[in-house]
Length: 83
Image (spheres, rainbow, N blue to C red):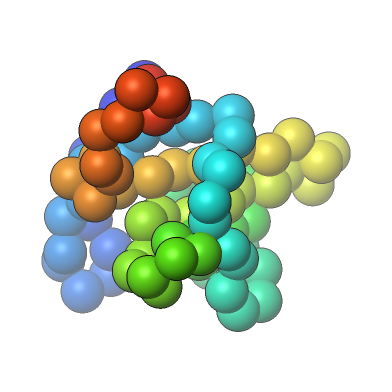
């Protein structure tokens, strides 16, 4: 499923939620500051190949994980995940 959010600077993002995100690397420390999903902390998720930020990995205190990926930054391929 997809959501539209704005960060504290007012930049809007349309993100899709995914169970897995092959090809991303996590950058920085996990934080719950300004989270868009209550009780989930986030970490920046970037492309392992080119370094462009693709979105965020979210993790709940109970250990549930999902990825919120910026839809316009994903390239369509035959095996690309769908939100």
